[in-house]
Image 1 (cartoon, rainbow, N blue to C red):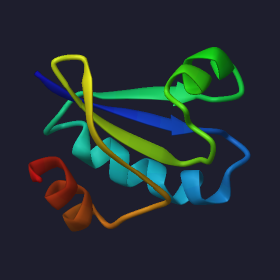
Image 2 (tube, rainbow, N blue to C red; image 1 turned 90 degrees about the vertical axis):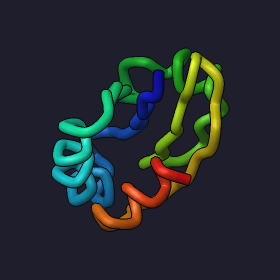
Image 3 (cartoon, rainbow, N blue to C red; image 1 turned 60 degrees about the vertical axis):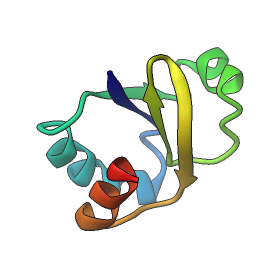
Image 4 (cartoon, rainbow, N blue to C red; image 1 turned 180 degrees about the vertical axis):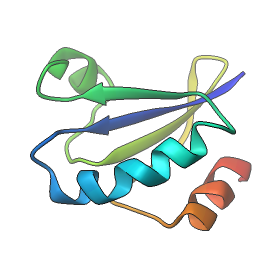
Length: 81
């Protein structure tokens, strides 16, 4: 099963603008939101160095990732490969 791990922070301006896009995508694929301020250990284990970071996970294995923002259509393309 596919899911998205979305690493962000409330103080991150790009995260604030990208949040609504992630909310839209959550109707298509599960999105797990990780606040790096509160879950620093989780972010460190995933080797997240910048926010926002999006990781596509399938069967608990990372498939691919990107850092920064994308449009809704670009995010769908990212999910579909």
